[in-house]
Image (cartoon, rainbow, N blue to C red; front, side, top):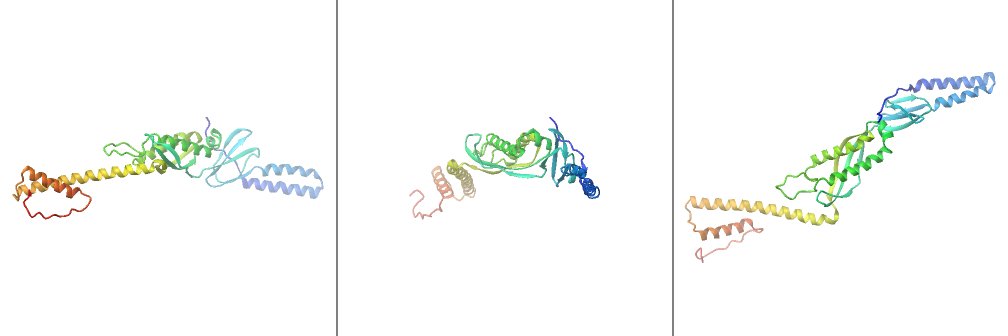
Length: 284
């Protein structure tokens, strides 16, 4: 497998002066000597004109002579080269690629919508021109394949707080790094350098989005209730301990159970407690 090589070509302005000289000689010969033989110089003029080309900033020209790769011109300016060279323009600029949203299954089979934002540029013009067919289309297809593979390697989300598994939603840094490595490996054959790759859009597919939203809400409610109960138990324990230490009241098991029950209802309830005045004894 070949790699890119730079080639030196002639300065275009020098050849332009030569072209003007040939044209002047041709017309002067026709006028002064009145012979059509100088029309032969028209061939030389056409030959010279065909060799001119321009390379703009962050662009390149790949030169090929009768099927043989001769080199790449990366230098900017006005140049002249063998007129029989075919010249293919390849941009060296950084480009953005925002892929389409594709529906894929995550690691546990949930359908999700995902797309990727890719920043890339051509690093090796030989590989981009000759090792793949239409390198821009190659970037699009291979990026799509890498996204599908990545989505199948991770779960969308993790509903178990005790589990520290990397997911598409929670482990963005690790997932984006894995995505960039995967795309870099795939595009290396085309001489493409991946400058950045990251997930741009991530969501459940519409057919399960409502169900998953309810599931997330349920998990959040359970987690919130768990925290409330943990806090309520601590507050009840502190209250009983404080009352006991200050000798405010002596509790038997029944009184403790009743007080714990009332405090837990007050602390864990969704609504504010309604006070009730007991005019009798504690057990009435």
